[in-house]
Length: 185
Image 1: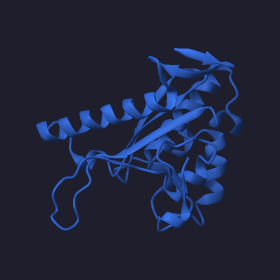
Image 2: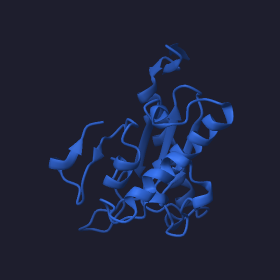
Image 3: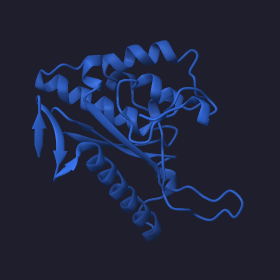
Image 4: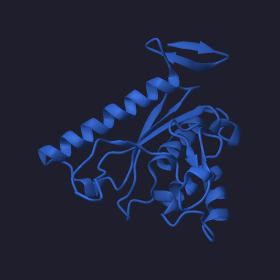
C-alpha cells in the first residue's frame, strides 16, 4: 500500500481507483455466482451493488440497493447524511428511495467508522472516499436475457447526497439520466 499525505494512493501496486473498481467487480461476480447457485436471489440486491473505500483509514464497505424495505434507518443515518437527506426528501432529483442505495449505505458506514476513530466525519471526509457501483443483473430489454454486469454511475439522488465522493463511473445530476446530465467523476 502506498500512502501520500496520509491518504492511500495505491493498493497492490494499482491506483486506489483501479483497486476499488476491481474489488467491486469481483464482488459482483460473487453475487452472480450465488444467484446462479440459488443461494442468493436478484431480489435480495435491488438494482446495484457497490463498494466504497476510505483512503484515509483503508476501510472498505459494500452496500446493495434495496430491496425496498432495506432503507438505512433514521437512527443509523450519520448526521451529515441525515442533514442532506432532510433537505432532499421533499423534492428528490430522482424517484428512487434515497436511503436504499448501495453507495449511500457504504458511505454512511464509513462516516460512522471515522466518527468512532475520532477522525473528521464532516463533508471534508467525503472527498477521501472512492466509490465503484455496478448493475449486476441487467437484462437485454428486447430479448429479456441476462447481459454482463454494467457500470453504474451515481443517480441524481446519490450525486447530491455524496457530491464530494468520486465515483468510478461518473454521476448523473438529473432525472432521467442522459449524456447531457452526466459528469465523469
